Image 1 (cartoon, rainbow, N blue to C red):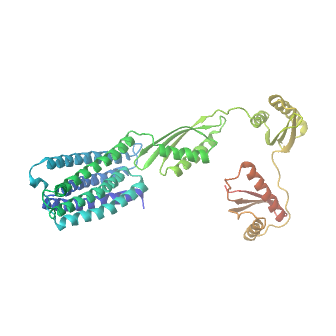
Image 2: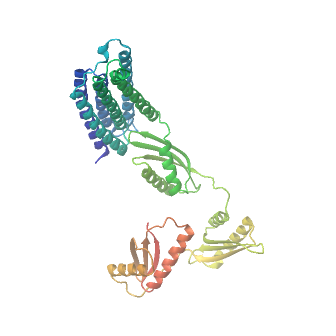
Image 3: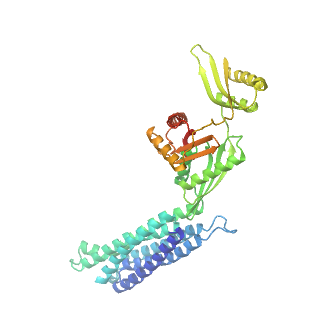
Length: 468
């Protein structure tokens, strides 16, 4: 079900039950003269007003962003929650005033409570309704992150305790009729209803403190530490290459707005930067559903230049590609570097001899190496010719699956075979193993590729890789 529809139905249910409870409590409160029940009736009347405001607020909050409200209309829920808090404070002050006046009054009628079966019925019904309604509103508020529904839920959670206090008060008033007049117990039982109303007022004020603080914090865009920690944690776990420089999270209704600055390599291409930003936005949405994220990329400090960084930077100036670096500190104190240097496949060594020697000397000079060994490889490779006919797709894929099982590999998530005449490439994808290091991952994939190539030697060049 759509979140906005969930909130609307929950708010509508709250309005209906508030109206029924308010009517019941006012009628029984007037019949019995119970201040506790009358205070509950007034509380429910304000809840009815607040529930109506909540229903209006969730409808307004569901409106999409427009030119006048580019961040949407979600803040109206916080405004409504603050309004409900002010109404509850007025309720609590009225109840406190009435309780004090009755306790100080010399008129016995001020303490009289007409106990009847209807008084007990209405309070017990209110208890049952409030327990169910509070649980429902809490659940929907949690699912939709609705401040207005959370305020409603808090009201009815308070009603549970206040109704229980009123039930205790009218029970004590009923017991007072069977206790000797003038005793301390009789004095307390006669005033138990007033004491119950004081409990109601104190509970209301405590809820007001919590709701008001949260509503004001949201309206003032107070930093949400919990949400920020969730974003920082998932970025540190899943995007460690792009550390967070700054993070701001603001909440509007059930939507989060995230602004962040991440550090990226200085030479990052704009297309790659765009892809990284999209990936970060998707990642943040996992931590904070419905979040809208703005990513600003800032060139990061590369820190001290490692030998690998120096070698790659020097290779780039000579238009080389490099891989497979070996940095060896020998027992007799020498520093030897082995570099796999990638050159164009059809290039002659005579043409590239001078640049290669210049690169070798620069590496030795910058890293103070005793010897730099260069192993030349073609930057592009040609697939070997496979003369054995390629079976039909389903048969071939089944052979690959059986071979993967035979070598103890995971079942493939995909098998893709590409061919150009007798040149064939079969890419077998397996689930990623995130717990492995880069070195462990490389060793495992190399081992699986070798075993699979031995199992299916004459049909295609086999490559085992992780799923895209």
